[in-house]
Image 1 (cartoon, rainbow, N blue to C red):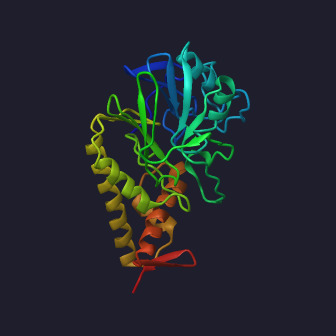
Image 2: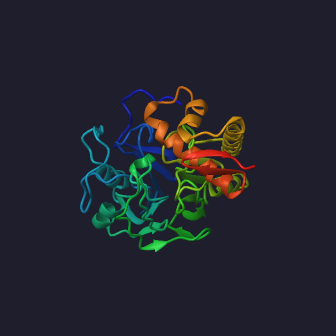
Image 3: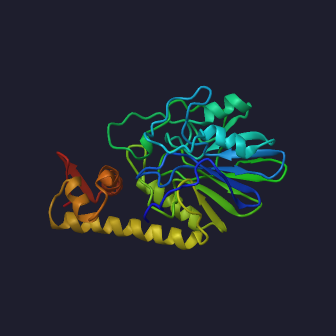
Length: 307
């Protein structure tokens, strides 16, 4: 999907449904589409904020890693507070701790006193290419939610849905009252999710996709890109796509041993050169899964079929 033409509605509060508003962060990139979408849940006196996004100079924040961001003159934390208005934020929830999702949680907590609730912290050192500008090492939740745990406000109930794969600590959040699911980076309509070892795990990612396929959510709200009105249809296609990629890898290795860059060149023809590193990480995730199954092996960065 092509990135839509500017202007993008950064800093503006958009009503998605009666209990859901979103505010777009000014961090558009080849990995984030038009930017991270922060969701505000609740229409009454108390609200929850999902994926507060990148820090942008608020209290206790670090400089944003996204250069040249179009802020429309408004910082993202400031825009969230403006959208919330007179309501009280009672929970700040993060789907995972990539730096385009969770760093603003700290500044938002400092300004409002709201607790940070949701995914577990994660600190991982890895020299490989990363989508989402790596991990947020300063993330410090006040409470970690387990799969199926709920929090609530006057007119909303949010349930945690554990979906490891994109990262090991990834959570989706179900809005019980409307049947909506906030999917973070696990499912997006504009792109497939990057699964980058060692923390990204393809087997876990596929199991999490199947978990969502078996649910009956009415609509998905991803952190990037448009809402999804036919969730099971999209997830079915994503499962098929990943299985097709695995079959493609096995065909290539069936012809001859190959290194990952050689496979990426064949599998991702016409890919934006800025995304080749991320594509390589997803290929690696498939290969690690196949290696664990005893189907492929690697020596000196060259992969081959097991005899």
